[in-house]
Length: 120
Image (cartoon, rainbow, N blue to C red; front, side):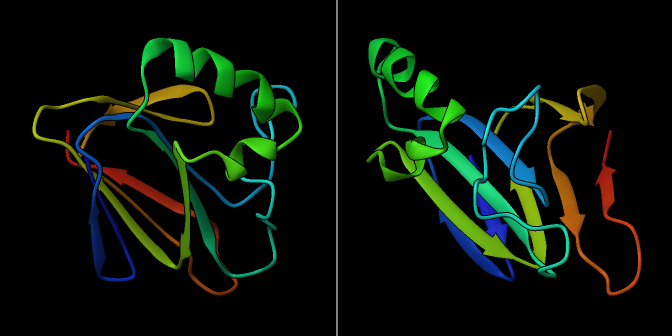
């Protein structure tokens, strides 16, 4: 998976999950991006990567408290423009609803709503 934030590309060859948020929680209280604020002008990206299934299962419960951000298997990135790409099309969801497939783009624009677009 390739994540580009404000023009800076980062490769995550073994990514399990990428979440882009402008709020700290989703899914009934999972603190996926605990530092995210709706009014900070940034999108926050959580990438879970480079772990085995067992390591992933150990990290998952820590999302309830937001402490997963200290895991070596989690990378947090912030910025105004985010693109998520993968070598194969992966399903993308927006607010729990199917929103297409990768690549996806999200951006913050002052005094406007979050924009979420897909190519497919």
